Amino acid sequence: MKPDPNAPRDRSLPRLAAAMAPVLLLLILLPTFVETYQIQLVTYGLIAAIAALGFNLLLGYTGLLSFGHSAYFGLGAYTVAFLVQRLGPHSMEFYILIGIPVVAIASALFGYVCVRHTRIFFGILTLAISQVVYSLALKLYWVTGGSDGLRVPRPALLLGLLNFSGPRGFQQFITSYYYYVLAIFVVCVVLMWVVVHSPFGKALQAIRDNEVRARFLGLRIRRFRWISFLVSGTFTGLAGILWVPLNGLTTPEVLYWTFSGEIVFSALLGGFRNFTGPIVGGIVFTYLKTYAVATTEYWQLLLGVVLVTLVLVLPTGIVGGLSTLGLRLRKGRS
Amino acid sequence: MPLLKTVNLRKQFGETRACDGVNFVVNKGEFLSLVGSNGAGKTTLVNLISAHLQPDSGQILFEDRDITFTTVTDRIKAGIVRSFQIVNLFDGLSVFDNVALSIFSRDGKAVQMAALADHDYEVRREAIEVLGEFGLTNKIEVPAGGLAQGERKLLDVAVAYALRPRLLFLDEPTSGVSTHEKAQIMDTVSSVVRRGMVTAVVIEHDMDVVFHYSDRIVMMHEGSFLADGTPDEIRANKDVASILLGAPLAS
Image 1 (tube, rainbow over the protein chains, first blue to last red):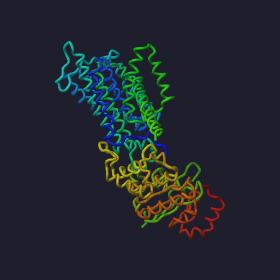
Image 2: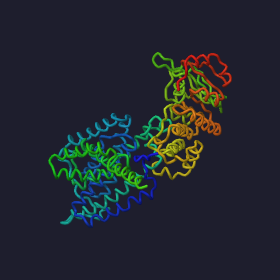
Image 3: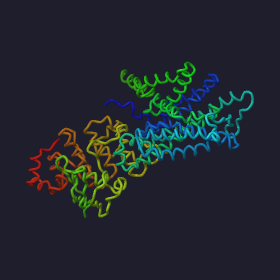
Image 4: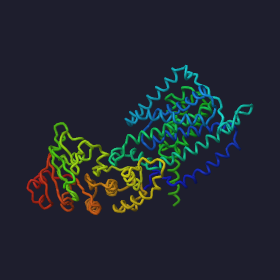
């Protein structure tokens, strides 16, 4: 019997911890040996990883391809921007505390509509809803700033313990915010890992593999898909919340469908059939895009070539490809 | 008292009367075979009883309770469980997870999000026990998609059985496997079902298998019942013989 490299094999909690420890150590030490710009990039990467991780609960584990996850990312970002504009406290914890319920409610509402369908119909519905949100952000310019967007200054972290005004504010903010995002990222990874290894997560995979049989186990398919959507959207929304203070500005661009495409791209790049795939994909995509934009005017063309190559050569993504390679090497040795 | 009773159950697909006023009775504890040529309406009858299809008219009574318009989930809760003609498994999940999921679902635990599935030792023990009964103990960690056909058929029944049904419908549990394996599968299935005191209705084409394992045999033809009796009675029935000879049974 050939073991299926796509089957979720990372089973025990200690194994997750053992796999994460060296990477985590490296990430913790990172600011000591790279410049601020690189730290900023990694922070963007971690945020993209959280977004893709949430997205992949739907694609990889529930078998639903959402083409509208920009909506939740963007709603997270705009919620923070509104809070900055309308209410006083420039506290990151405050933004997160208000932002998460907002994106959760939005995901629950939109998800309720979308999970009435599956496959391409589901994809189109998610796309349509995200485009509605995008047009609202564009047209209601007296609230959203239209295409100019809304500015978000650097918030205080840890209940105002860390403030970043002053001449060296920017650099201090980047380093502190990196650790801040890293901590949330670790929490998100652990939470998501528990979700996909819970009975609920198994039920999602069962529904993905065989909807009819799942129904004849007594599972209420639509409810499971809905909850999956809610969790997925909330994770991606949290990524949006974390992204906006780093970017300093939110524009309707993060609500546009091409941004949803970038999230899909990240998951494919890393490998949507592996738990760690979207994490790797999110980080690699951030670098890929940054360097593509810096190198050439035709950066979209470059990304397109990467995507085509990926689908043809590495259909299981970076992580999927590496684990197949690892398996082959191990087999060759024994 | 009959466990299940259908009253004048009808289902029509266009011009075809798949179920033409069927009065079907299943008694508690019996191992019943539903036979008939292709298109006789056997699977349609099971589809109607398991709520996969809605009848055009008629009634379904489970322990004298009218369940005609209840949902799939309601019927599973009542104890009516089925397997499928074409193997229906969760191929990406391990053999263990396939069975464990049945147990989670049955116990209302499938919605748990903050607990690790593998750390529920009660479920784990039961799943391993069920897999042991079906002789799949050494395949626990294998993805269901990687099993051989005979094992897949067994796992398919095991997944249904793990729901602890009171009435279990098995739609061709031995289709697509060799004659040798057929006997193995039926030995395992019938002994598990009898030990667990589960009432079972099996759709089967192979008459040797049917005569050997059934307490009672019901024969369907063109949407209605043609014969109903013990294996000996069915063997002696002229109508059955003529249909079996007139229309040689496939597979």
